[in-house]
Image (tube, rainbow over all chains, first blue to last red; front, side, top):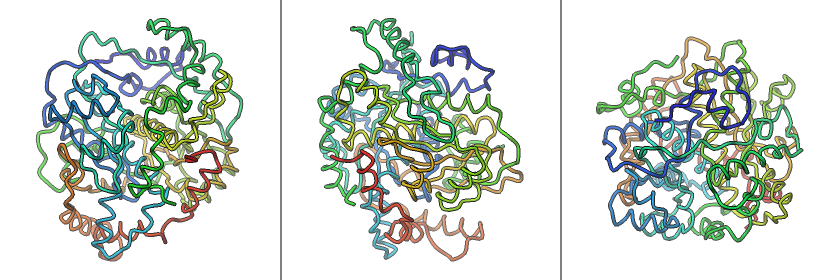
Amino acid sequence: MFDESPSEAWHIRYGSIPPDLPDLSAFLSHRSVRHYEDRPIPDSIIRGLVAAAQSAATSSNLQLWSIVSVQDADNRAKIAELCGNQDHVRTCGHFFAFLADVHRVRTAAHLANEPGDGLDYTEFFTMAVIDAALACERMVCAAESLGLGICYIGGLRNDPEGVKQLLGLPEGTFGVFGLCLGWPSPPVTAEIKPRLAQEAIWFQERYADEPKFAEYDNRMRDFYVSQHMKGEATWSMRSGRRVGTKKLTGREVLMKWLQGQGFLRR
Amino acid sequence: MFDESPSEAWHIRYGSIPPDLPDLSAFLSHRSVRHYEDRPIPDSIIRGLVAAAQSAATSSNLQLWSIVSVQDADNRAKIAELCGNQDHVRTCGHFFAFLADVHRVRTAAHLANEPGDGLDYTEFFTMAVIDAALACERMVCAAESLGLGICYIGGLRNDPEGVKQLLGLPEGTFGVFGLCLGWPSPPVTAEIKPRLAQEAIWFQERYADEPKFAEYDNRMRDFYVSQHMKGEATWSMRSGRRVGTKKLTGREVLMKWLQGQGFLRR
């Protein structure tokens, strides 16, 4: 479906001449896909994708994550609304809610007569979020290798309590993000998005604290114009607005909500 | 290097008869590799892997992560010690420290005359950890497709202040985990590790709160015995011990340290 060569993908990402690259085309041409064909994803593929997710590394084999498939039409409509009313959440072939989950291992600890009293530390919240993200991204790479398109849904954090009620989440679980999966509806208009130059995010031996995104600001302004996105703005301007308190879209409650849910207590 | 078929990998993961699976062999046979050949990884591969990492999804294109390559022998010895003195950190062909990074976007916000005052919320810590993990797992999938072996290093969180000093990390950055990369040294003795049954981590519409890991406890006891790991123990027993306060290996300071570093303040 995505058929850029590694060199083409590099050129779109960085706007620079590609070096001699190994064949990583399957991993360089990701983009978010928000328009899907009305065609089901076979169960055998979904089970394979779950196996791929479970094949990701997990710290100390604790497997601090779970997934909930939301396929019922009513539930899907409800979760789409909770996620900021995004249409592709409603229309995608499969929707997974990815959870950070220390509940299962706490149950296991108690059955083994262990207190599990480390689980309310920030360390285990961090570990569970990492576990969920590693599992999901391996699922994504596997899905894309089969021609599926995906879109991450950070909006699952807009209303953590609403998600908890809808999915029946116990203490020790948290909906970290959602994942839409589906067959991309042609023509695929989603573009590979330019990224910061490697020099801006990759340091040698020590972090070099000098901003290196001026050229990216220019590249992104051109990209936004080419995508007919309104208003001439650089990456810094758009990102700067995005990280202000006004744009938290409900997520300002996270610390308090997570502590109520058994995370981040110390 | 890893040549299990999807069906073979499934059987090792779950101990059950595999269903009809799509060809996901590249994604099902991951294992941690801790023994490497003394053979360098070409720069073109490393640059390609960084491009793969940057091709992962990132929330609102904020790119809240960075990497530091630690290749100098002295620095490598120091970071190996900080990570709990793990030999493969010293011996791997390439070592990346993966950072959650809101520092760069804060700088961008200030240059755009925006306050960036949302960045100390728990939401942005969560987002940055997710961004770093997605980037890394895409790099890992790409690396494994080229025959490289990898090992995640959660030990990078054992001494966050020591890592900060060694890598010169500014406020707004946090060493989330390390990644060892190298050519697996044959014979590859690392085994695919069994995982919880899909029914134990994957729910339909709602979280089902009944433990489903009894059969896994038995499978893992057999696996530990087959790996000559001492002491007969189930997954629940091992995991239960791991999540007690005694096993935090320095990471109990994370909340306080992260708040000092500008994260998780509200």
